[in-house]
Image (cartoon, rainbow, N blue to C red; front, side, top):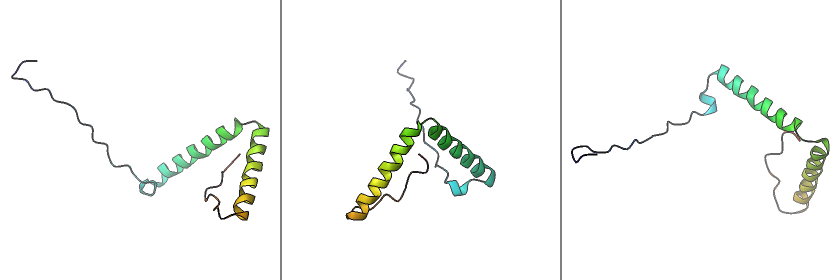
Length: 80
């Protein structure tokens, strides 16, 4: 590059993320459908014994939280 040319470096400015409530109804419905499919796909890929074990672990955690000052997670698992 000669002295008369200046290198220009690209700057990428991310756009503001849209919030879900700003999406139109069709987009929200499509995203909810994709979310449900993803949850089902992950759950279907787990063996029954794993799902049973997770359920037992969650129940044990609930008992521990009830017997102590530890608050239970406000986000329980949707599916095993």
